[in-house]
Amino acid sequence: MTRRTKGTPGTIALMGLILAGFVTEIATGAWTDPRTLAYLGAMVPELILEQGQYWRLLSAVFLHGDGSIQGTLLHLGVNLFSLFNIGRVYEIMFGTRRMVLIFFATGIAASITSMLHNVGWSVGASGAVFGVLGALVSSILRHPHFRRDRMARSIMKQCVFWIFVNIAIGLQIPQIDNAAHIGGLVAGLLLGALLPHRVNPPSPTEFVVDVTPHDPPTI
Image (cartoon, rainbow, N blue to C red; front, side, top):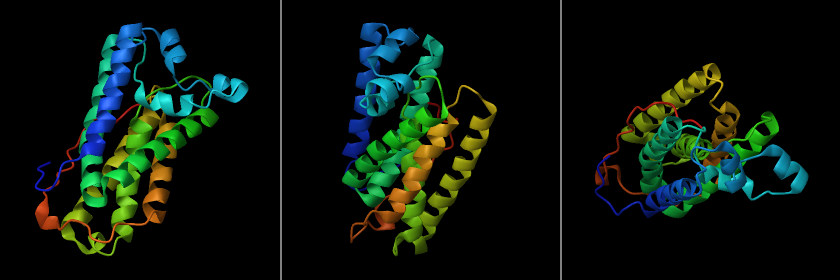
């Protein structure tokens, strides 16, 4: 993606928070120890429902791991790469505050969906990334400027394609928390359709966007 307008501080800040979470995991040994990761802030249904530790619905978004070094690094890398591409596209087109709000809101929605559907603990930002992806689709569809723009429609079609591909792959791999992905996606679609848009979006001639294909995000 080539930027010709101002930067994307919201996406960079969110990536920084995810990396800060990973540094904390390394410092505490949580990146290779599921018990420590759960203690650090993973989404653990019984601790939320029985002990009221609702903060885990958000803290889990900024943690990554599957108990192995290789799996943890892959989990982290895929989510950072996905956020770097999708978050910056949304932030350029629809603004920093809107993108950050959607990331946090859909991340919590993804955790709630996962909690209600799964019995085990989970971590990861991919539910929030799916949320931003869904919001990008519905925001383009409803925006009077972008829904008529050829480049914006092309971006939307790419997003829809990768949504279906990633969900289909998630259905085949038990380790992927598809419930969180779908929960974040639905929340993002709704927020993109309901939140007010800024009046003057950037002109498509001011930036070039390329949504690069990548491996499916995992949570």
